[in-house]
Amino acid sequence: MLAKVFSSAVLGIDAYIVEVEVDLASGLPYFAVVGLPDASVKESRERVKAAVQNSGLDFPVRRITVNLAPADIRKEGSAYDLPIAIGLLCATGVISASTLQNAILLGELSLDGRVKPIRGALSIALAAERAGMTRVILPRENASEAAVIQRIAVYPVDTLPQVVEFLTDRLHLDPLQVDLQAAFAPVQSAPIDFAEVKGQALVKRALEVAAVGGHNLLLLGPPGAGKSMLARRLTTILPAMTLAEAIETTRIHSVAGLTGIRTALVTTRPCRAPHHTISDAGLIGGGHVPMPGEVSRTHQGILC
Image (cartoon, rainbow, N blue to C red):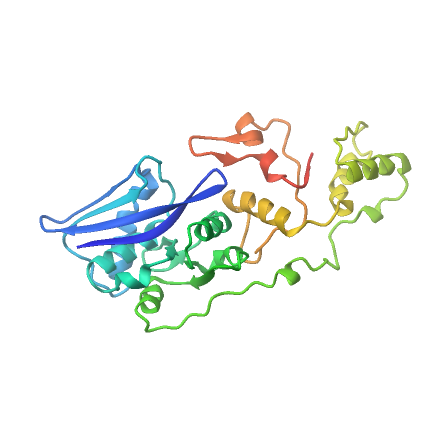
């Protein structure tokens, strides 16, 4: 039996669609994952097997081959656990293949069947929209972030049995809705404010000019003069972020793992101050699978 489940992966800050193909053949029990998987993807064999069995479902004792296409791009991370498990259950006839059309599945599985969060949910939702998908099924912690893209239905899930019941029409789930107006509502009690600075008239004038024109700024002075204090407050006089700017910034923060369950959208301009001994890769980004550095993480904000 052959089953196909759609998933997604992040390369840089952009996402692309991954086809998870699961084949069950006769022969001695064997479980192979191909398609340039890294160590964390190969380890999904043990996580998926334990999660399926501990969820009260039958794990097929067959020769199992899982292919992650396109096979010429290296896959990393644990987000393929859920689509592999659903692909196995689809190949064994537990889930109908028709229910998986136009759906993206993502999530790491714990050994007891719980679905754990992933990175890059917003970029994945954008990729799903571009590919013509209509549904995204992913961990609850990532759902509010993906639901920012309101043209697709985002379904938050907590466990593998819940996903199985939803795909077999034994459980009804409502797609998550995010109130973007509430996300952009002004914060009434900001932790810092430019208005708190007393004196320093010349420095404040320079900061105001830099904020209006988008200029770089060099602050010189002895320790305790207020350089860092003023720089951190510069973000509070910058223009409010637009939706397009917020989506760009959130994509970078999501890939870097800086968003959480309460952060559907980054609506305040970031301000980061890395130590002067930071490495080139930490500052600029990079790696075998590119990850954003501090320069990228301060996109639309302030880098000190």
